[in-house]
View (cartoon, rainbow, N blue to C red):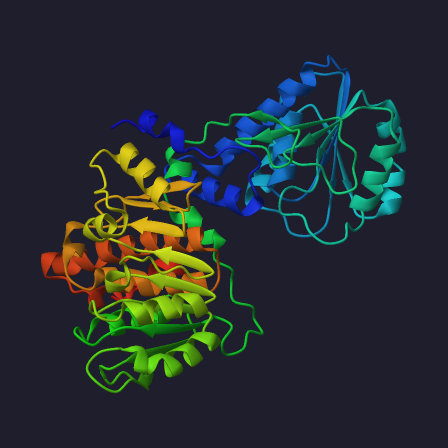
Length: 467
């Protein structure tokens, strides 16, 4: 199968800032440098300006990569009668924008650093004389109140008779006669130009997706990482514990296990369920715990006699991940749900075996994702929420060992505390596959699911793994 066969899974329409950062991060991991994307973007802006046949261009830049795009455009416009670049001479600057600023010092453009409103006012004639103004001040990451010198730059640009061309997205409060967006529109009505991002950066998971996981605040308190309840065990004792440890390693602060099986693990909170299997007699305890959990992960090692309990959990849970024995008809549906079947379980809950052809497999999973997000595990994982489809090819044949699916469910549960279902499933598949690859590098096909645990934070949070 060629990548061309995967074009049908490209998303369309307006893309938000977080998703665009993920796509760009994936493109960089594939070998497309940030500076190359910036060069393509700036050249496209310059071409749009040149179509107006101006003689004088005024480029308003910020200190981020949006400003870098504007500086590239200025470089391609330097043959005009006059190109003036105005930018703040204060605050931090991204490395890519600093690179472009350095290049501009060797070009036939006039650089005007400004620090305050008065500095901008002294440049009033530039706004009056410009044939076109390029707005490259604040990109998709802008938030909060616009401060000086940007506020005065916006006011002067709005008062100018020159048309304004916005780079990627208009700076808040600044009028735009035309918007040039890159790869996909960031706002409705933008004209889109292709900057050469590989298709794979969007339809496959990659390290860029990790940027969607919010950073822990410096003042975070216990529980900020979420509370996960794992319900399972009985016929099979170890499975829920592997899932629970996966949730802890993926950032959940509190993980409880409700199970008849007890394995002493001091990092987990054990909620004892009497007997050898989970039954409706345990519902009062389980539903009380479900009410306090951010996410319930259910099904690992449960056996086939507890489905009434699974359905009751689904009815009470805010968010849930259903795996293994919980994947049966009638399908449990929480308010927000992730299902993590392998091929056999997928066939059991849908009545349709997943096709071998990857594109057909994607369509099949998409059609099946009517009640929540489905993560179909396999040599290439397929994730869909019924609208979007994403593929993940991290992993190794060594991950056929028992327990790796339980671990994935736990990791997905922890991530589901922080991000929506589809994103949680995609990131969990990517991270677990990467962890498996690293563990198998040391253990080969003798790798255990528990060998992957120490690599989960190493991959998810980019911290050093075990030596």
